[in-house]
Amino acid sequence: MAENKINMINKDEIEAEAKTVQEAIKIALSRLGLKKTEVQISVLREENKGLFSMQGTKLAKVRVKKKS
Image 1: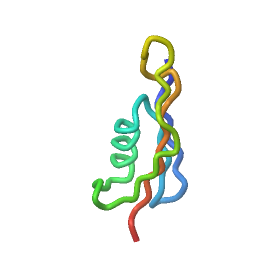
Image 2: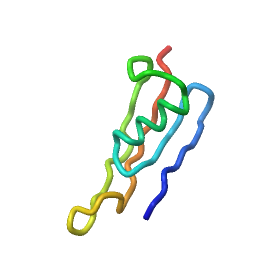
Image 3: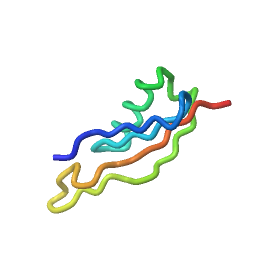
Image 4: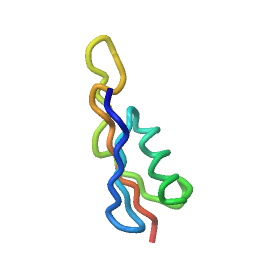
């Protein structure tokens, strides 16, 4: 099973990977200490559920950046 991954780009921007887009966003917001209304969210990759709709075959990836 794949694990969550976090890549800090700088203090105001982060890329996160998780089983779902929503989980990746939650992880990134938590790490940045910000609310959803305070950031710009880009979905870089949707999760790929794979055979028989099993979650997590390929992780979702998002970039979350603090609004200027």
